[in-house]
Image 1: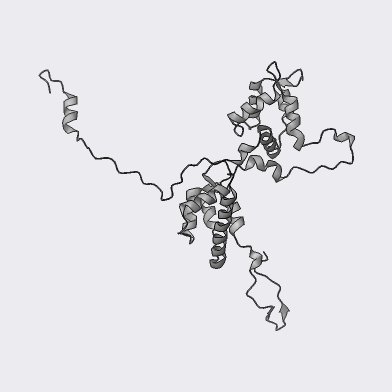
Image 2: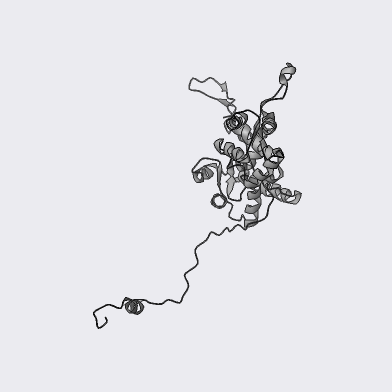
Length: 279
């Protein structure tokens, strides 16, 4: 306290503060630390038009009518900002990145800078309809299937033949152990999948594998499997549904342990064709 009665709070702070020189303990981390890589994803090989076409088929939307809202004279042209507005209205903007948008605009832009949406919609709508179909009444056209939207729904890593051979060998080992020990990992995967979207994190996949009898699964093997089943364009979301389809043993291979005949209470013998795998 000074002579005037004021409190010197900085001196009090320095007296009561204890200076510590030791560093804080390291933050606990998981045993599985995935290293980032520079993998090439499958969607990097498809054009922006193919990606938009797949998304349009998946969402069942028609682009032409929405572009006409910005073209009252129906000339078939609009600006680049209006193209982005249409994608935002149709909820396609989050699926089309900046690089794809910059690749798309020059493909249909005239010399005066206007975007020809009429030609663009004609290229996108090829999955929905065939041009000049009215001139051929006997023509047959199939409906769009899952392969039409696979390019936009799944974004996998492109692997070499050697890596694919290692992946097949690793899956054979896992499949053999599951068949021998009759391990059912699907309930454990579903417990991790709180949102029920068919994907979990890679760390959750590693925990399920270790808890179900695969403690020797190395980090390199987990990375190899994630390169196959991380199909959303990142190394975080693991598609356990496709993984279970590959490694789980079909029920048809297991027959019923019951005898071929059964004896009811009345004493008559009835043939039993019930199989354990027939569900």
